Image 1: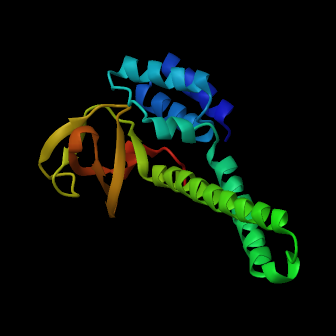
Image 2 (image 1 turned 120 degrees about the vertical axis):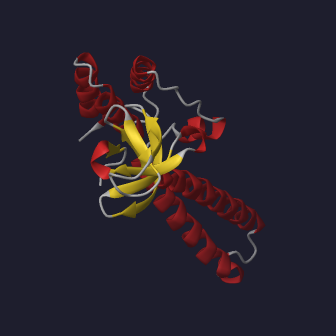
Length: 197
């Protein structure tokens, strides 16, 4: 699915009062189109309706969100090709640059720039990859259990639309970390992955 389709689905779910699924749809749309202000506003509104606090993004995440995951992956591939190509020419420097100091300086600056671009694109792509462990609570009053069993004691409850990070799997249960460092086990069916697999 595409970001506009997830956005439309989220709007319909929000209208129907399905807060958890609506927030999940908006999260998916935001992951695919992180710089879209309309999606960002819809996600903020849905979180407010669900009573789930909106997470303030740090400056580097807002900078990263100028491009989506596919664009950063393409930038990474291009930077890698450019850095390898320029490094290869630099290795042949005595043969290619004989008597051409300007070309040598341009090659050095180009290689440095390509390597810097490679680092930036790698970090941005890695941060998108890290988001693949995020999930959204779909069910209301979801018990956060101390062990991966339905009969295990509950240590807290999670609200629909609350974002969690999946840390471990045990059968049909997932160990998650919620806002404020709360951890516990929940059934996999009660969550929706932000990045569908």
